Amino acid sequence: MGLLTAAPEKVTYDDHILPIFENSCTNCHNPDKKKGGLDLSSYSAVMSGGAGGKMATPGEGADSRIFLTSSHIEEPFMPPKGEKLDKKQLTSIRAWIDGGLLETKDSLAKNSTHKKFDTIRAMPENLRGQHQCPRTSLLSRLSRPHPLQPSMQ
Image (cartoon, rainbow, N blue to C red; front, side, top):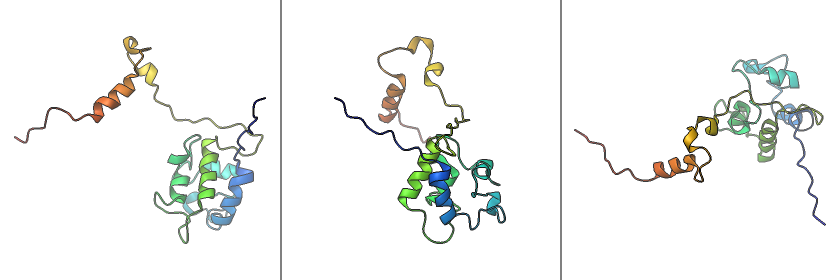
């Protein structure tokens, strides 16, 4: 008999993210104040973004504005006064974004609107299907010292 593993819990706005926002963010980011044009008090308001545009792109949690500012990686640091969100809260926000910005457990994940670079389509026909991945070869070649030294003349 094989071991059954539970599917990871879906991180949703209603169950996981709203409580974080209510505790740390909605004093300033609510329908009345809307600091930076951002209201975090409802799912639809969050999806509308703020003065700086969208706060997140589905599947790109680590690069999202809300994650970067909340984890004090990018300014303006949020919340502006006091400690940044704790690791568990930041992990939840990132997982929510990476998981497709679900509103509820019954929601469908949103797809990223960014076009991903397709290395297979960009690869010349004669290199497709080779045993050694050209990307790996390129990285290997780039990491070696170059035999030619730049001239200062």
